[in-house]
Length: 167
Image 1: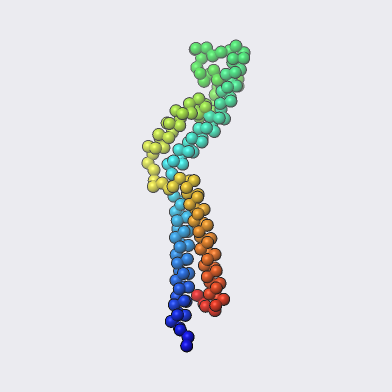
Image 2: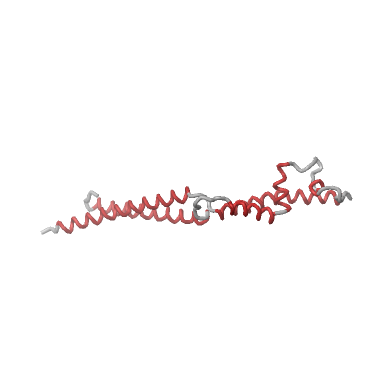
């Protein structure tokens, strides 16, 4: 005689596992959504500031050296009555307003970084998410897990259909 209770229990197990897979997939999707939409971490903002200072300063440092070298090469050393920014101005005229941030970053990178990072630290900050590097690795881990779940679920359903179960 057939054991219908055992058959029903097997079907219930398959359905339960399918529900577990679905719940875990929803949890993963929710976590990925939360991670991708979470506010930036304060530490990431500090890294942005540091990177901007390095890039800006690096862009202008050669110009400062070139301008000072031209004055030295022509015997036009800066006089005490000439301001420093006038001494490093280009031959075309004064330092442009758009160059000022680069000049400050080239000449005073540590001070600019301290000042801007202090401002970042003092800002009101929403509940921050994890740092970007951690965020990306966690999202990759979750996506890999979601793929594994999807494959396991597909395999389970295929086996159930092969056995003639409609779940």
